[in-house]
Image (cartoon, rainbow, N blue to C red):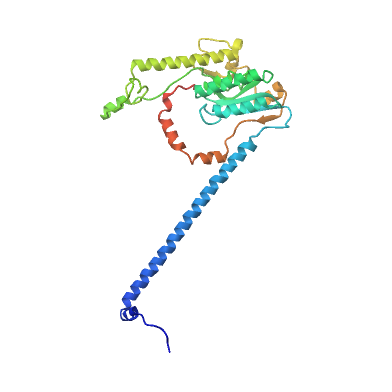
Length: 331
């Protein structure tokens, strides 16, 4: 004897199997959707946890790489300290003041370093960054008068690169190196003619009559051209003063010395822009008399490069690229 109780809906389902199938299918869909939603939520949860863990690990890697990989050099005995500048002198990279100055301080302050060698391979760049580095070099030379600073030129040491090099006690080159270019430039483009042909109207609103100075889409007035030239001349004179102070009587000035031209390393030695031929190894061995070379260069590791991608570097680079030509450069 069965004790099952018949529900009102049972007879209805039995008499109408279509309704039962529809409810069953709907229930299955709801269950399936719920399972899918939970799977998606679980996947996103795992993704965010892994992302956070990756960033945390990279941050720790960067921290320990900075504090231990580039830590103080101890118990290495007498050695030659090496710092490298490769590429343009800019606010970021190996030629940035924020990168070079800590390395200079560490190299000069280490009791085991007999001399500091700055190896430069640079076409130039920012006069501001170069000037900051030169000021720090001069300060360190006063603080460590018995510790010389030598520059060794690789392929090229021009403009802003030579601005820095001129502060050294001696400059060594290869006979085929490119040296010089003591000058300043400010380059940009003007699109006013093209805009006129295309029927494009420039609508620039400013507060201040000179706020649109160097705008590439507006005509350049004689006043703005004159002002720009005065700025370039002033920076050029600053550059010349640094070269004269650094090279002293060794410099054999001619009308072309500060014209912006550059020369081979062999010619640069003849002109007094450089002192002799040499490499990092020969300077360490023959001049410093300390063949052991310790690299004090601050090298950017993988963690720093990856972490930068989480910031606004792309947008910042785009803005810098748009106005990159409108600032003075030693190049």
